[in-house]
Structure formats: C-alpha cells, structure tokens
Length: 65
Ligand code: FES
Image (cartoon, rainbow, N blue to C red):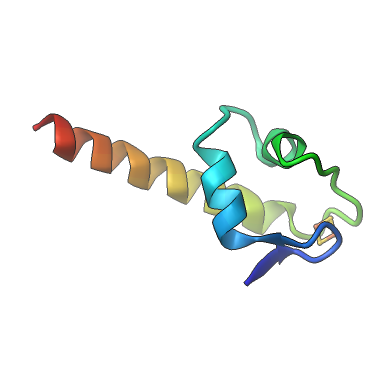
C-alpha cells in the first residue's frame, strides 16, 4: 500500500529505509531520494517508522537471547 501518494512510497519501502537511517520521516524520505510535497502522509509515516524500529529492536533482543 502507498504511504505517500505524492512520492509513490510504499509501506515496505518506508519500513526498509527506516532501518537504514536514524532520522525522522523527512530523513527517511531523503534516503529514498524523495522530498515531502503535500505533507499529509508524514504523521502516518512517522508511526510506521517508529513501529518498524520498535519491531527491529524486539527482534534484536530476541536474537541476542
Ligand atoms: S502524500 Fe506524502 S507528501 Fe503528499
């Protein structure tokens, strides 16, 4: 599903990029070579980024034992 219509960013692309940088949604968009346009997606994007990073943290803790 598309998270950002203006930039045609799909949820899985955003999740993947969220794990490859530390910044906010705009930083993650920049990693994808995108810049927010209408900005209506940013709140949902921030939630998705936080969720993905939290899941990665839990997975890392489980793997560490
Ligand atoms: S929907 Fe993402 S900038 Fe417009």
